[in-house]
Length: 335
Image 1 (cartoon, rainbow, N blue to C red):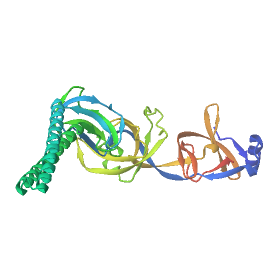
Image 2 (spheres, rainbow, N blue to C red):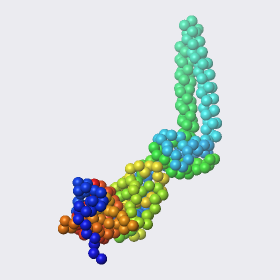
Image 3 (spheres, rainbow, N blue to C red):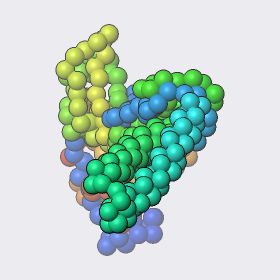
Image 4 (cartoon, rainbow, N blue to C red):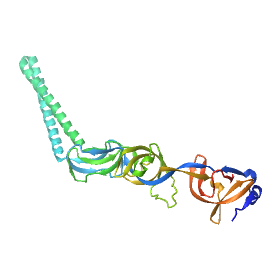
């Protein structure tokens, strides 16, 4: 069957378009990346443990997994009954020495008065002054010991070591822990995606290659069309292949709301191919069949085509033509 042929004037009359409302588009072959869907796993560049500074039992857990925390924020409280006794003993010692200091001050004042009257000797005054100084120094030492006990009690608060999110709480309420035990782990670094690709794609994976990260819940479409999503960039390709897989890291903005170790779909370019693309306005669908209008020898020929995927380019939306056209064909494109 021969192709139907129309003149440009007749075609534009049938479509209701004037010659000034149509333009020509020359079909050319362009190189496009061949995209492959893989799963990337969300990782954190740094995971810092929050550790206990004293031994004791866990009295309170303030945070849960997934909670955001700031550096220095209290995430758990550890108590030790011995610290309560030590605080009481330190306070009692300070109180006792304070009472002794009052008596030593009275003895020193009395010795000075008796010395002025000529009743006491200088040796008695020196002895009273020495006793007063000794007790004063003992009070300073006791207060320092009391401050140490108070500091140890204060160190029962487990603090977040950095800004981030709680990955896992390692203990339960009432657990007995020792100094240095890990209470929780905090993901404090920037999030990134780690890809594990088949070995056959190792040569096609390059640093600074752009990839597309789709939103949560999106699966691989049956038509093979790459879904919309965020743009990421491959920042590192590891030089070692392990178990037939090559590892690459992808940097993506705005994935802080993902969970660490969560998997999401990523489209990456693994090869290149040539294809022909036309503007979507050049395609007309009639009874389920796609047509384009080709200018040939001053006439317009309607040609049935088979279309592929549609993509965004710097020049606007383009749709791939799998068959029906050849390079150099001129199409009528309504504005």
